Image 1: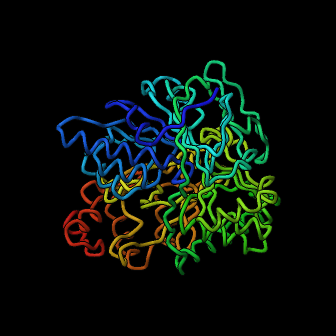
Image 2: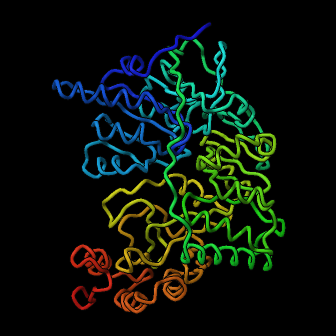
Image 3: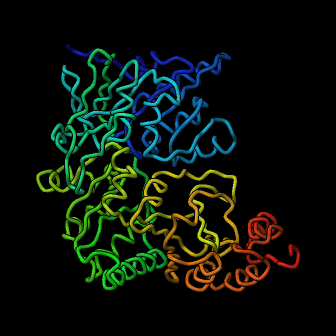
Length: 496
């Protein structure tokens, strides 16, 4: 069966107002890059005529400018899930111009198969190669593409000529059975392969192939600085001490690490610590720092759902696939983030907090309680099920005007029951086996910025009970920031 070659404009012409679409990719890699721009043009033209055009968007995680960016500016999004990081989309969500449901990344595929969110009309999948039997070689990510293709009425492919057909063998596509027939996922070490190197779809569903030659749209990460490097050093020193104490096996455990400059600093710290042995990663996003540590021999194997690499680093991997193919694997995100596997493999998970309160609850998603930043991503999948869950954050933001530690989080993503360790540039708060008031003492003394320590100690005196909150004052830091622009100006006598 020869599939019809179509233009991105022709593909966009197939899409109707109200359709639900599933897009391949995970972060800004492996995503379609042509059809989004044409759908945005279509939306703008129809809106100018007074006609509606909006679609529902299911993805793996965030996407690139050519999808989330252009679609949000064209007001072409009916709803969006499960995660995003685009500035223009964020503006649209916080202005309520599009509905957004923030979702644990491990759950979306299975909940779609359960029928919770209705049908998928089209799956739009970027591929490096395909054949007439419907065997697809994905590009830099797997994400939720297998389930999207399973459920979609029709499939549109974007064949990206920039991605080599030699990528075949990098992917491990496995979809678990659904209840009540689900069995254990037969993955027992990080490097096990349990599925297919290709995504197999019904070829009758493929209605067209768009030929592209487009690079991934990876934004630059903020460089590491003294604060993030100190956080990385504190994490590595803590884990090395845990090995010596015997609470972590001497052979170490697999690492999951989030995205960004803190994650890069943590991996650099682990690699530089002579007391940390070479380790594996079971994570969602594989970024440049993983490749750097792999070249140095500090990371022996990495399993993820995407290769979220800068263009030079991506070209390095693609140019040396013989070295990397037996050290990397890309899986569907319901496998890379699977709670059963996280717990069974014994992951040390390291994620970033926007803010934490003094009792160990973490906000990962909202600024001052009501403005969505990006989303929960996979942090909940990992933290709740980890062997050891670690959250990292600089102690302050906005030149000290915002404290990362507050009396009560303004939005609650991870409860004190899931958060074991908090690390800043000032130190490590170990919350294991501590009551709420002991957690508060640990966090204030070891991780809070000096400008905020006394304010937090004074707040603790205002409360009563097992978790000593004062409901008149618990959000005073946020109230003060909205009023004066600086949390340090809070005066407890105004609230107590």
